[in-house]
Image (spheres, rainbow, N blue to C red):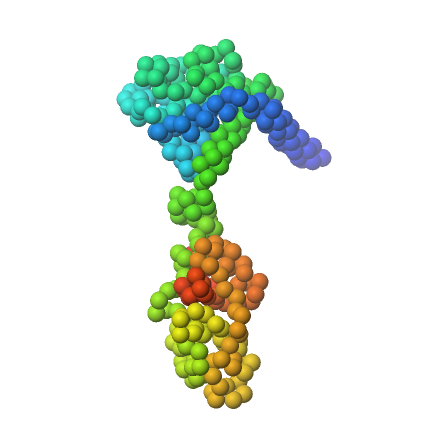
Length: 323
């Protein structure tokens, strides 16, 4: 019974925390108005980077916001306020925009950063919950977090406030990303590793080209077709006309279906005349899904005038980490 009671208590507390933070995010959404727009315009107009700084838990959030900005097309660095007072203020240069985070708005370690940006006329965006705080009074763009209790009953542990600050940072990053028309290709360039990179690889990056492509001319005898298919190892051969345009495809399945008197025929009699193909800009993940849907193991990649640019095998996608 005691164990059951504890279980219910744990679940109740967990739900209370999430519910409080969800309420706070709702308040944040309603508070996003002109100051948010000013912050976006300020960053878009800057020629430098966005320097994000905060102390303690706000520092951890500042690191995350800076990382999100940098990975979505807005150059950014995190500045530790303690290190800033010992030489790292030199990281801030003209053209930069500084974002300072402090729930109270009175974090002592931020004082030197505030003085520095004022001295060199570097734009400052301040984020705090106290409108009369030193930070917001000194900010060119003050953003006030809604008045919301922390998730703990004692209202002292930075939880709700850090969640709101992180969400605000995400809102800034995504707004900037969309305004800059940040493309999936640019995103892939910044995320070459891991699942994100794999999901954004295009067919052009992993397809086989030139002499690796299995091709024969129209009218070719099936003995030659069979040899080309065996040599290249894709289980398919492209049939091209004199201009090099694709007119048909023969797969190993076509060979099995036409096994009777196969070697006495030409490729024109066996080929599929309207084969499935993809473009080089197709995401490898989409190509993999299409091959699975059509139950094929390879697909030709075409360019203008049906000219063959390459061939993609399902194993190429898997080797690249596309799943």
